[in-house]
Image 1 (cartoon, helix red, strand yellow):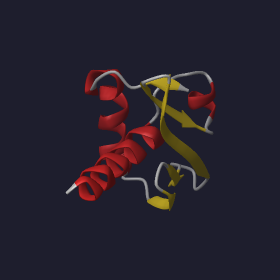
Image 2: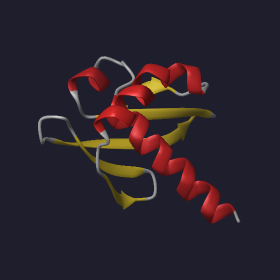
Image 3: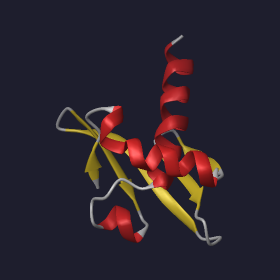
Image 4: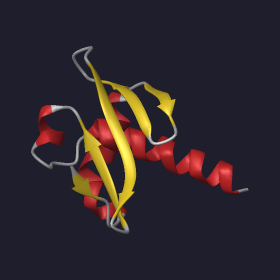
Amino acid sequence: MFILKSQATIEKAIERAKAVRPRVRVRTFGEYAVSGSAGNTYTVKCERRDGQKVVDCSCVAGQFGTPCFHAAAAVAQHIYMAQTIAH
């Protein structure tokens, strides 16, 4: 789990996501299945806790609180969906 404060928080993960281009599948708004570089699928959850934007990924890096490319890809999808719903 990590707290998403700004794009800078996950800048490195964004660059990796651009290179790997993982597949993001929406399970529900806020929960995503994201493909890993070795073919695994990870669950990423985007939600608000105590007023903070929190991202959880089931991968090893995510379990240690490190922003990963799975999370970056899911966050991009989440933001897109949130903006679409708002309009």
